[in-house]
Image (cartoon, rainbow, N blue to C red):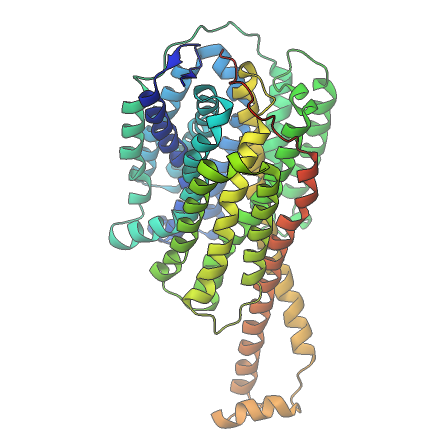
Length: 512
């Protein structure tokens, strides 16, 4: 059976899998950069001699640019064509990646990361919509399984790859690694996609300005809230006011408006609306736990960088296996909604298991919960991606994919911000609670310090006790954060009830 390209041209069987490989590599380019750079930040900070606040902008600039531009994917496809847009996006992303590696100051780095984010924003939505137009509905599960290998496994393995490149080469290598991937994806994709007719479109500048203001303000709050003590900061207060005003104005003026920059009518489809809610919660669960695991094992358990990176390999293998199995076998034999439930339960369980660890946890104590979560990722991602777009027509695929991609990115940002705030606030709480139960006359404190020749009333003894309290408070705070990411996954279970079951033997989607 042949699929159909975006232009309506039938696609040969061999060519379809060339497109799959090309779009998977394209997706890897974008999602890998969301986690691979994190490991190299200490080296970048040392090289440029910058503060922690300045280092945060290296991450924030990329994420803000990506999240702001991603919803505009459908608009740009109609204006310049899908082929031109994806080739330009890959080329631009690779060019700015090279410039990031050549950066000589933090200002240049932030500017280049903005460029990366702008061009990288189109990669995931375009890759996903190309796959959906290239395969009939009954074959989409297999295609999305391989696509999922890039979207989910790449960020999971990002810390491992980043640790290896930083350890054996330099921090610049985490940017240069994008160049061969981009070159290979361009070589395969440029010959398979045909040029499309374009349209002269009127830009809704007011809607665009409101959307940019709302999304940028939200992302700014999520990225800088913890370091600026949230609403104690005037910057965060201004961002919150801008978010509310721009967001409300954007939604109120856009409802029922035909030329709005975002088509709100897409959310009338309950499967698409439910899928966006579910992917938001899943992003909190997945990226929240991934974000704090390196901090937990390196900062608290004392693991070296490479060992901490290796912890993600079992999780990545489990996720890859689960995706291939789900896309090739399970999604055609079981109700996809049941697979979603199992995926959410496994993801939540894996995160909760991490929340039950103590300071004596070994490698496999840390890796096994990751394997459980990895299996859940595959069971969630493949059926969710197919259910989300089952009722979306080909003419709306690019725009729907852009919105879905933004929701996934915001979920990851919310997850990272949420667990960061949870660790910091709960650490203070637990420290205060533990410290209140210890006094210079405490028998347990005296018994602990006696073998060291110290007493609770001595300066050295007090420092020893304070260090122990900090360590235990940190452990309890990380446990609370892992539990929070587990609960986030379980809270998405009722959302599955909103999703429509796909019709058996549905016909392939129409072409553009």
